[in-house]
Length: 175
Image 1 (cartoon, rainbow, N blue to C red):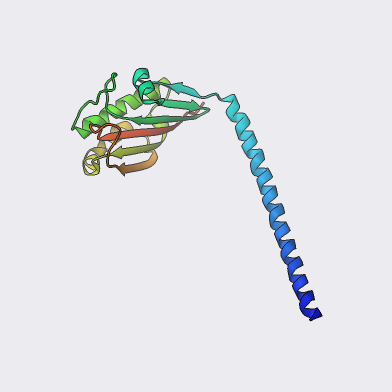
Image 2: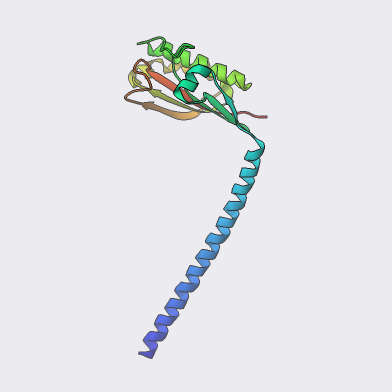
């Protein structure tokens, strides 16, 4: 009986020691992560967000900014085929809508002194994937050096029923 209690006590101590070691490691990793996060937060404080509105009235009405730059990162909201009043353009013509999207995206890139060569992520949302695949070759006129990473997603609908495609970008601007 005493042997069983000693073995049980020994196993309990071994488990407690192992558990303590894991906690100590976790605490050390957490502290290391916290220091990195704090350093990151300090760097972010020095780089205030710079917002850009391509169509201020439309964007304010819908409640979004077309782009925001923080440090060397620029996030660009999905571009759709619309005029300056927010009305859909090229209705029923996915290829022209795609070209209109890239035209607007180029204006945003130019605002930040960038080109499509600076794009690192491109996500395309379309309500007609087969048609998009037919016209996607146009992208070789946009991306001359290399293609960015990204996703092509077939969706049921976009913000307005006339929109057939929406393209969003992430950019890395070298200082």
